[in-house]
Amino acid sequence: MIEAEHLTKRYGLLAAIEDVSFQVRQGEILGFLGPNGAGKTTTMRILAGFFPATQGRAVVAGYDVFEQPLEAKSRVGYLPENPPLYTEMTVDSYLRFVATIKGVASSDTPDRMEIVKDRCGLSGQGQRLIKHLSKGYRQRVGLAQALIHDPDVLILDEPTIGLDPKQIIEFRELIGSLRGEHTIILSTHILPEVSMTCDRVIIISRGRIVAVDSPQNLTSRIQGGEQIDLTVGGDTGRVKELLNAVPHVTRVTVEAAENGLSSVLVEADGQAEVRHAVARQMIHGGLDLYELKVRSVSLEDVFVELTTEEEAAEGTGREEDEPDTQREAVS
Amino acid sequence: MRNYFAIVSKELYSFFVSPIAYVVLGVFFAVSGYFFFGITTSIIERVQQMGFQSQQFGSAPPPVDVFSVITSNIFSIISTIFLLLMPLITMGVFAEEKKRGTVELLFTSPLTHLQLILGKFTAVMVFLLVMLVPTILKLCLLYFYSDPLPPLSPVLNGFLGAFLLGGSLLSLGIFASSLTESQIVAGILSFGFIIILWVVDWMAGTGSTLGNEVLRYLSIMSHYEDFTKGVLDTSHVFFYLSLIFMGLFLTSVSLNSPKWRS
Image (cartoon, rainbow over all chains, first blue to last red; front, side, top):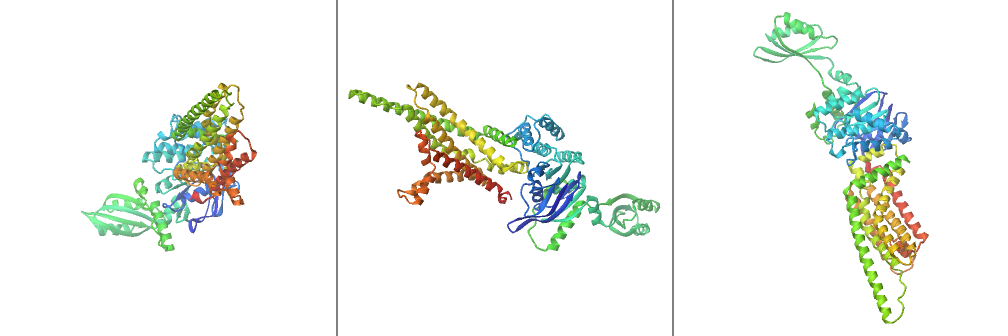
């Protein structure tokens, strides 16, 4: 549905993105992940036809974005980072205007407006002026605008930025409900969002793609095996001895021992599930099992790993990106 | 065509909900009304004086086409007000779209630049017509109180001249607006363009070298005088039409430049 081939965009000597290639299948939700300034917006603007790439080719819904711009653009819904709203208009008049310039037939316009308003939770808001709407509602109008012509491809640039946690959850559900009908590219620097909504993730750093995979594969790729945190009451030596006897356990590390409670990290080779075996071993050995949980590597770790690897490999010593406060706040 | 009309109506809608439009209209109506009153009363006084003087000498008063004199003066004044007000109408046309990010919507929609530029130009021309309505009404009033009915050509020509001059200024202003995302910068730029075209013939002096002729030809006001006198010269019409075309063409070049979109 979307093909990006060797896209490069330079501003003077500075390359915003360099040789970015990827494909998105029909009905897929692709997450575009990267720190601020990594080139997410640039890539999306190229795909949406806002500006041309310096090099490379972008094909959307079967049309080259710059050879056949009108055909391609009429099949793309684009929500930029700041929703492009005419704040002096009412929601209805704005959506009517967008429907017209996106080429929706005038006989279909009222129906389409009702459908997208309903879908984006804007029912009953049609007569309100956009400037009187809250940030969350404006974002909904932005999404309604991108959906109004029922596009094959949706490009959403940081769609949840500036929303409160409840709105973010609603927004994710909304995007989930579009799954299958539309091919969606979604950029974000909020990691849980990607693991929750996306089928596939592209991690982009400093203008280059550093990884493309499903969120699950990305995490297991970094993790290697399975890690379990245990809190057990009893003699530390005996705990170690018993745990080492469990099949597939490769390493046992006692991380802390206080008041007769030991915190133990159990590492397994990942070829078989060991949690139940570990638990049984502890109980049968007469120890008190207080806590057992799988230490999961989050996408966050993957992300940090991949983007810092890239930095080290490049060794350019460019300035750090601005600190990512949004991430901590939300996750 | 549908896209074009969508742009025109959106622009007009945005105009008439924005305070700038009403301030511009208000100021223009007040100032042109003031001048209309001033010009009309002073000319009528002059004509009365001439009548008294000729009575003293026992001769018939000379025939004066009061209507045409007033018309010509009104249109001269209007042109000067235009020079000051037009940049205020156009300064936001593209700058505001860029500032608000709505240009991302326009440029990722299946719209051509031609539809976009002509749509926006048509909208400001409609605004220009609205500005001229009260002046036309006042002149109609004068016309129907005149006895015998004077020729209509001075009004029609003056009106055409004002429309063409206004169109040229608006088209240059749209170009200025396409260069920047700041309305203020766009406004100052269009003032700059307009003032240069206004005074460009002052440099020409009295010589008749080719350079001087060119400078004189470029002056935006020298082409306007004939219209106020009720003379229709197609070369002046051509001058303004080419200025309009140039402004819109430069706008399209500027919109095609990917540089500012970074």
